[in-house]
Image 1 (cartoon, rainbow, N blue to C red):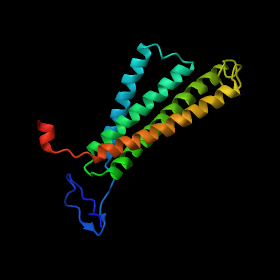
Image 2: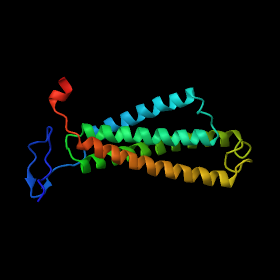
Image 3: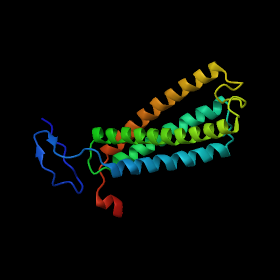
Length: 183
């Protein structure tokens, strides 16, 4: 029979009942640390890609680079959440990695919704909607390109979720003591 999971940090006094610890398995401080690490890695790799000339708004290379940096940044964020959680174990780390990915996706969707809604509202107020290529009803929107972009985005998101979970799994499996930090 497996030993029950026990907190190693400030919650070490949480009582256990059988195989389950009484308490919260989610450490939001670790998730926010992973989120900030993901964003920092994403920004650094984006700037690196722009320096290499991969920042063009169109083209397959830019899309592939965007997917690669999202996957790498998700792994880093998941790993950081797993390492910084006071609860140790691969499954807890994987949970934290997945939650870092979910928080990142939620923040990106909210920011995109506000940005797109604000932009489209401004264009509608100016009477420009439909006259600009790429806006709803505008010329130049190729359905095959949109479909390919949606599939590429879905694949990149699924792979980044897997990367965040694997990063959390590896980070959660690591044990750090004060000697590691002080040395």
